[in-house]
Image 1 (tube, rainbow, N blue to C red):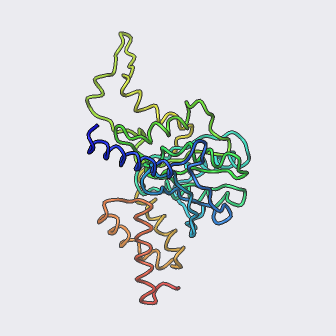
Image 2: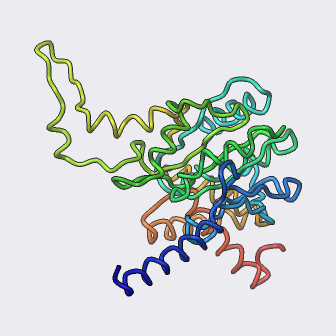
Image 3: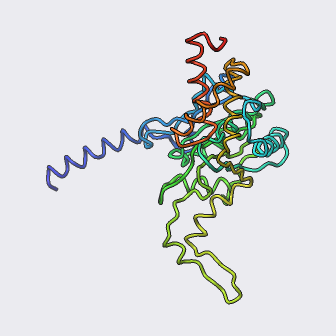
Length: 303
């Protein structure tokens, strides 16, 4: 055998031996459990290269303090999510949730508010990035025997073609041989109802029958199927001008502004929204922070 080739093989064997020592052994749990008493919310983190092990749950030290009463002009959406969360923490059947619609309308804020509402009754939240959804089965296994109830939360969810997290999420929602734990719900937010990109050419796969029925083709069916696995769809819509101003008033009041200052702020709030090209709850909150901050600097808004 060629000495150079033999030396190369020996080096390769040494590298493989080192990798083998770093990899989790058979039956090892790839997700590290946190101190569950440290927070009501956790983020899933991964350790560098995926070959070197799994991830861990990091306690969120400062959880967003938003409450259900802080969210205005989304009463129907609030009622549906609160009802589903109440069923979940009470141990009754509840659905995985997909919140979709216009940006900045309160989708993720509503999830955080529900967490704060039901945390005293054992509700906990695990935030996971879509790139890490391949580890979702391991996270579900980790919390399966816990007494708490867990929302696994993926914010701003959408997939490009071929992303690995798509299949993992699809299996957990419905279709895996292993049933998902009763103490876990998947909650996702997205700006679009169908979580995979759609193209005009896919409309060609629709089939039209003689009696006028329309049947989507396999490509379209596949793209719709993930959204349909969420049992509860909650839709959000752009705010009207009056709704936007009501949200501005709510946030200014929370920052300590009185009725006169709130009324005086209306023209500026409308200009702010016009410049941003959006009348959303997020834009209303950003304006209120700016206005209240400027007012306090001038001692115009009580501190």
